[in-house]
Each structure stands twice: as structure tokens, then as C-alpha cells.
Amino acid sequence: MQWIILIGDDSFNINLIHGIQHFGNNTVSSIEDNRFVVDFGQEHIIYDFDQSIINDYEHEELQKIPFQNPHFIMMIYKSKDLMKKVLSQDNFVRGIYIDDDHGLIMPIEEYIQTFSIERS
Image 1 (cartoon, rainbow, N blue to C red):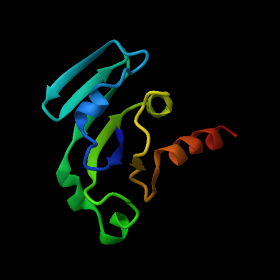
Image 2 (tube, rainbow, N blue to C red; image 1 turned 30 degrees about the vertical axis):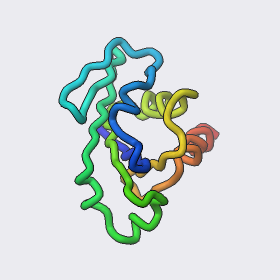
Image 3 (spheres, helix red, strand yellow; image 1 turned 90 degrees about the horizontal axis):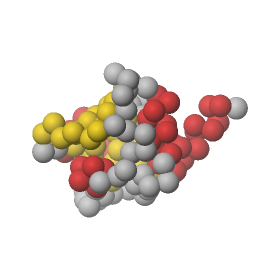
Image 4 (tube, rainbow, N blue to C red; image 1 turned 135 degrees about the horizontal axis):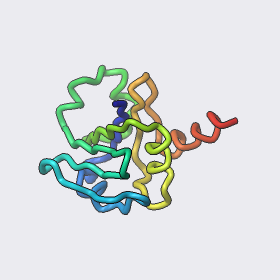
């Protein structure tokens, strides 16, 4: 399993993500109050809201995040193509940042643009 971290302001929460229609999914199931899974048949995505993730960040990394009180949701996936497809949906949250867990922290709009660069 791989993951990225979705970072938003203090209004960003698991219910916001839970309310998004994930095109092509079979079911959405709550695991816990702050965790749910979206089933796509052979593949699935797990979303996990965990405010303690902030403790894993170094001061320099936090400087890249423009939110005063950032909220973090881990997006856990097996298929990178499925993750890209979900983030690229027109109805997915914008104005958030993505931490790719490889040192890049950037706005979701820039992160999505890297998908088309990878294909080139």
C-alpha cells in the first residue's frame, strides 16, 4: 500500500471527503468515525483523518503548508492510477495541498499537473 497526505485548513475534515461522489466505486463504508474505505471492486482507497500526523513534520516542512491550523487526511491506495483518477475528478476538493511522502508538498492543482507530465 502507498499513501499521500491531503492537507487543508481547519474546515477540512473527513466528512468533506466522505461526501464526494467517487466515480466508479461500488460502496463507501465507514470503518471508524475518522476513517472510511471506498471500494472500486478489485481496488480500494482508504481515507484516514489523523490530526497527530502534524507531529511527524519538521519545522521546514510545515513552512510549506499555508494553513494556520492544518488538518491532515491520509489517502491510502494500492493503485497509483486510481489515486490519480480520483484526485483528478472535477468534484474533488481543491485549494488543499498534497504531501507525496517523498519530500514534495504542493497545491493539489500542481500535483494533478504532474500526472500529465509523467505521461509525456
